[in-house]
Image 1 (cartoon, rainbow, N blue to C red):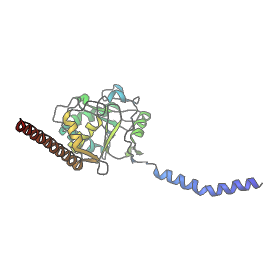
Image 2 (cartoon, one colour):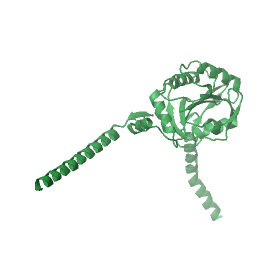
Image 3 (cartoon, helix red, strand yellow):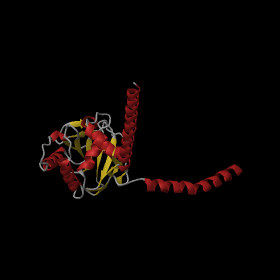
Length: 266
């Protein structure tokens, strides 16, 4: 009897802690929005359908740095402006499509069809002025299970309301191995920021010398979510070079003096 009362008292003491923990857990769960999951890998086995009706696994589609946009094609809100801006920025970015990068638009509305994806693909590709191979930008659709696998892995959370969805907007750069590299937020994007994000995503591959210089001079600012000139690193490098040149000059000068002394002695 005494043991039973002790257990009841113990449970009553723990009850506020259990309730508060449940409340905190509920508050920390994101229902709509983006929870950055940098370094996460997207599920390579997730299967989707292209705008031409071809079945493709995500791992097969991501064979080089990728710009990923979660949208739904018949969205009356931010998706159309987001894809319009994406078409504009890939037109300006100083990288070659299908060689240096690819673009994937993935519909999170499982009721959308490849025919719908095809219409929207034609709309956005025709707005790009540069030579942009159709295979460089995939418009994918899929079932709810595969969609959720990918959106959960990327920390992208959306909520259906009637026939529409409440959701956020961003671009995500993915490495050739399917690893999440950067999130670019907003509805306007800087071609330079996108180029740097794609260079960062190109982990595990040989990076051209120019790209290495850019990576050295510019660093990613997590708070501003953009790339800024790394003044400290540049000044430090210049100072080291100056110190090295100064020491080399001293050594050469000392060597010249020694040679002159030898000549005079001879």
